[in-house]
Image (cartoon, rainbow, N blue to C red; front, side, top):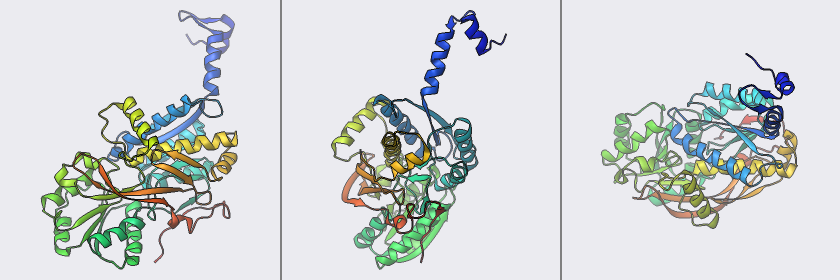
Length: 412
């Protein structure tokens, strides 16, 4: 028999369950008082090597915010969607979370292709969206906040360093979608500035696991440096096959992506040790906030948690910046929250103090060059303080042009 809410209130209880009208209304009031927030990431699918630590960071951040009093004195209620590394599913879940679940903020996306599947939905329905992952830069959108590093902050440091340390002849291997193509163009920009030359460039589909032909072309080209912009679990095979071919002793590998999927843990030390990467966050960072964060992370997720990635830290940053802005605005109103986000917020993150640039909606990070060690982690080699996302800041001024919803790409 169906029992209506009106009947429950009239009868005083649901027969056999002992649920009184006051209890039911109390639960409804509590649910109504929560603030619904949405997360779209990959718990399953070929990109979930990045998604799983980001999902852990999402839950950890939301719980930490709630334990600190929530937002506007209210608890956050996290609604999660597994997008299964499928861009169509990303778009569908974005619609559901915004229209049906009425989330106050949408966070997520991993690949740039997934972000570009979500962004038209966000623009259509005017939702606040945080993309918490390093990417190829250039997104200029009043509704979008990009908290990961851009090419200026990674490649702008890594390319000249590698050219000086190893030689000026580069060969780029990149994932075959918008992230790989645009980032490869940025390699050309920074390589030209460093006086280097590009001896080869290849774009590898995400499902490729056999790199025999790539290895052969590298053996013929004999570059000084291989720039890896490879993405996903299948591309881990490249590093294994590269080492097996004896190329580690003949050319250096530097990467803007390795480690985000804990490749340094999956690969053997003889396959990965010595590869150089650049990110704002490494688990090994020696600062008080990070030490406390790592200890709290291990207490929550277990002492044997594999490695806390830069992506996980970027997710943590995104949630806290949004919560700070809502509290500063004293409102969930979209325009008021965006205005608060555009006040130059700073946050003491595990990576160090970060600042949200008001005009570009991107973050100023300190970044660190590090190499894979033999302990499934990284050894930090050199640090660069307060590196701006200048690639995007030069072309994006949302204070002057608030109606922009586009992505800029490199100009040659």
